[in-house]
Image 1 (cartoon, helix red, strand yellow):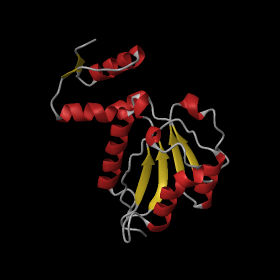
Image 2 (cartoon, rainbow, N blue to C red; image 1 turned 45 degrees about the vertical axis):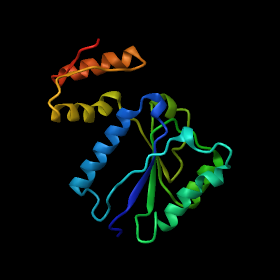
Image 3 (tube, rainbow, N blue to C red; image 1 turned 135 degrees about the vertical axis):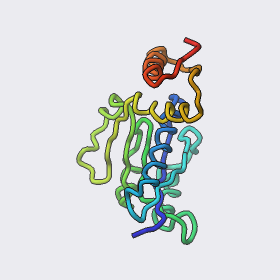
Image 4 (cartoon, rainbow, N blue to C red; image 1 turned 90 degrees about the horizontal axis):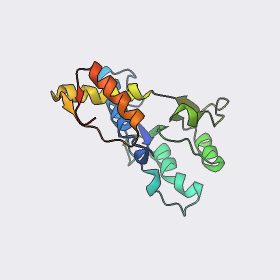
Length: 180
C-alpha cells in the first residue's frame, strides 16, 4: 500500500464563486488526513484553473500531465496520482474520458445537480457524482470564522439568493452579516 499517495484536484470553478467549495475541500482533506481514514494514504491537492489551460492543445496533449502523474508520480519517489476530483461543470470530451479510462484514473464530479443531470456517467466504472449543498460548503467557512473569533462579517456575492442563504446560516452559527 502506498504511504504517500495524492489525489489531484481539477478545480475549474473560480469564476463561479467556488472559493467556498475550495475551502470546504481543503477542510475535508485535512480532516480525512488527520483521522487517517484510509491507512497508508495521505490526500493532497493541486488546483488547476481550467480557464488558463492552453485551449489550442488537443485533448491528448492536455491530458499528458495527468498521465505522467498516474505512471510516475510528480518526481521519482513522490506521490502518484490516484484519482481526480473535478469541482466544476463536468465538461469532458470523449477523448479525455477514454484517457481516464485507459489509465484507470477515477474521476469524481462535484457540481450542481442541474449540471450533473445533463451527463450519463452511471454505467462507467471510473466515475462518481457528488452534489454538495451550498450549506455544506459554507460550514468550513463558518468554522474558520469561529476560530478567528469573528462574529461580524461582510459578504460579497453576485447573487442575492446566495447572500440570503449565507446570512440565514451564519445567523444560526452566531455570526452576523453586517452589509446586508
